[in-house]
Image (tube, rainbow, N blue to C red; front, side, top):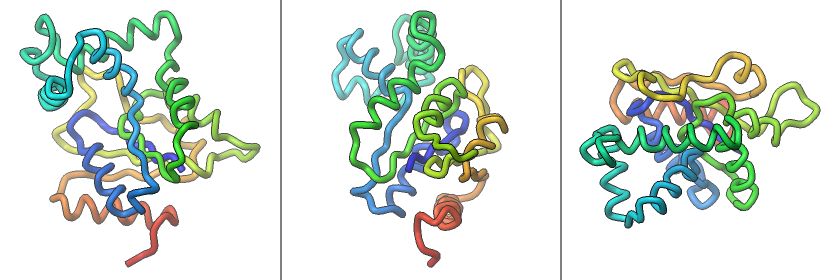
Length: 196
């Protein structure tokens, strides 16, 4: 099963991944990002080591830690826009489909699903003759202080949600314990874990 997580920057998507990996058998999960090819590309272009990459991830919105006053997030967006011109808007989804075929994980968790053009190839690859895709779930994370301003991602429209059997909306406006409880409730409703 593929679990897609959608939400604006800093809303708690990676924290949701951590909770999902705690609740599901960890050895059966794999966390993948659609943006991974962009991160790998920038790492190679600028010849960055692990320590430099960790700093960029920690301060990804701060242009002082990017290159030529461009934040790491904006560097990724610019690289994507360059690739999009030559390979089309679905390039990251297409790459993901290839990458995910090589994993033996029972659950693949994608923490940056925010563009229709990237999610469509994933749905098409998994789709059967049924009207909805049974083995893809979407968790939409909302947080009051977070928005998609200055980001190329957005929440999935109803045209995508209607193709999926499993869709949940979580409001991350409480403490971490309640956030984890919401994740647990979603996984239980989807039949992935037993109720406590």
